[in-house]
Image (cartoon, rainbow, N blue to C red; front, side):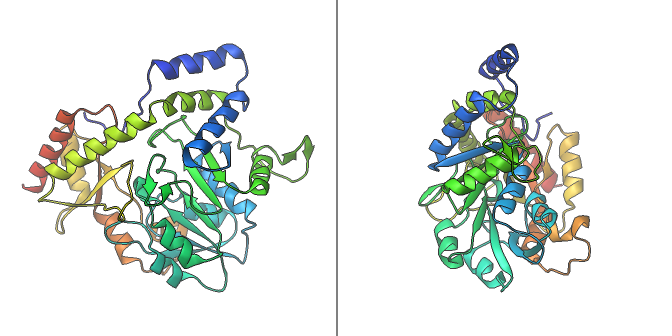
Length: 355
C-alpha cells in the first residue's frame, strides 16, 4: 500500500529522543527553548512559544487577543475544523468566509466583505501550505488583528517573506502529517514581547515569574517533542525540496485530467498536501475505495466547516468551499516517496477515472 502520508523519522531523531529519556528532563526545558529560538529565526519572528498542539496554539492566540463572547472572528470556511472550533471554544462567533476557487484560501476581497462591526480578529489560513495573499490581506484588514494559521506552512513563502510572519500571532502545528513533526505539538510566533509573555503564562497554568496570576491550563511541550523537532529542522530544506519535486511530477502526470491548487504570484508552497478536484459525475468515496483496492491510499481533502455537525444550524452559503470539500481528493505525498510510487499513484487514479 502506498500510504497517504508518512513522517520521516530517522536515526537522528531516535538518538535525540534517547538522549532526553536518559537525561530525565522530560518537560519543557532547554531543548524546548532551543527549538523555539530555531523556529523563530527561521521564520523571522522575534518570539516563539512552543505548546502542546496546533489547536492549543490557536486557542491561546485567541485568549491573548481577549476574544470572547459577543466578539466575531473571520475564518475561512474550508479547513480542518480547529480554527473555527477554537473561536467557538472562546465563546465568540465564527464569521465564515468563502475561499478562492484556484488558491483555496480566502482572499483579501472576501475577508474585507465579510467584516462587520462586531469583527474583532481574522484567522488567515495557508491552506495545505499554500501561502495566503499576505500583503494584500494585511492592507485590506487595516488594524484588525490577524492570526495566521500556518499549521501546514513551515517552509512556504509569501511573495514578501516566509509563512508564519503574518499578523499579530502565527500558529504552527507539528502533527505527524505536517512538514515537520514532534508527534504532537504546536507553536505561536509573534513580534510582540507582551504577547509572548502572556502566551508563556497561559501555557503553564497561568504562572508568571513563579506566581499564579490567572487561571489557565497546561499546554506545555515536552523535551521529547522538542528533540524530535530540532532533529527534523536539520533536514527541513530537503523535506520541502522533495515535496516540491513530487508535486511537480504529479502536475506533469495529471495535467490533462484534473485541477489542483494554485499559488499566488511570487509565492512558494511546501506542498504539505497535494490535492485534486475530481470531475463532476464521479463519486469521491467510490474513487477512494477503488484506489485502495489497487494499493493506493487517498484521503478526503478538507472540510466545509459550516456544514459539520459542530456548526449545526449554520445557514452560511460557501459554494466554493462546499465544492472543494465534496470533490477534493488528497494524494499520497511524503519526502521518502519514490518517483515510481508517484507514477503508480497517477496511473491508478487515471485508471479509475477512465473506467
